[in-house]
Image 1: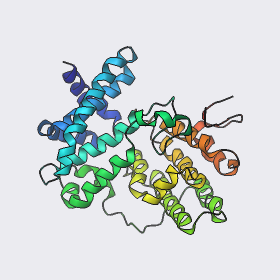
Image 2: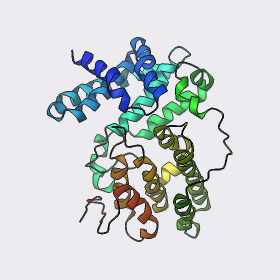
Image 3: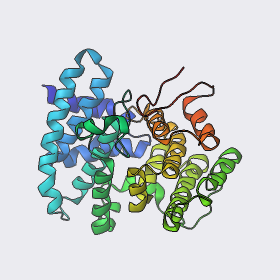
Image 4: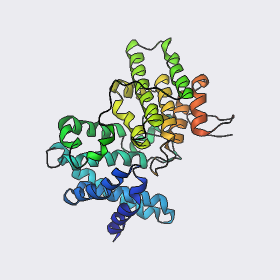
Length: 321
């Protein structure tokens, strides 16, 4: 009966706050559920994510739904491993849908009252990091590998609505921004242009910032692409070297994430994104330390609101006085 409740909730209510564009609401409400009926690993992930959502909406039964979510998550992962190891034309669509949903699950399971573990191991949680959510980077790499092997089949198959808004976009198009964002993002490279970073790292930061400009451009000027799609598209453009710089907590790399939080804030109308921008920026600010106020003032005000007296530390990176 619990599983029936979870599936019913998914198809009737949860979908509407899982994605923010109509064609994909219908996709996850019908097509993905139909795929899940013949691919149990996908069904377990649907039920797990539905239970996680219900645990947020019904605090009195949070423990019950959390247990159901964890159980389905573990079962789905165990069933998915042999499927992805034997990727084929028959299971690729279900595998890609699973990769998208498990990526979402990582964000949804991040607790907003604890330091974010999405990009690196926070200093205050080193001993607990193994108990945190699965790192999104591993999951995102999985979906990228599926696309590399069977991209034409997936983009033209039953999941085509996911890719439709992006078709026909010129990869070399200019990315103009609204005036304030233009000023802020154009000045950010000054934080690393004269630093002692290696030339390769500076080039990496320039490239990542260019991709972030594209996200802000889409948010401002391309209504055909949903806010969620625009914000989450950034992850497909990140390089291995940048991920390593974040893992090493290079200050200039953290600055780019802090600016990304401004974009993330604009997608928090969805339940699994709500509060993540604030959580992530507080965590990054705590790791960044002092001396970067010139660059962080604008994004902090955009995400946390105007006002002075904000303190950030490794131990309590979101204290507000």
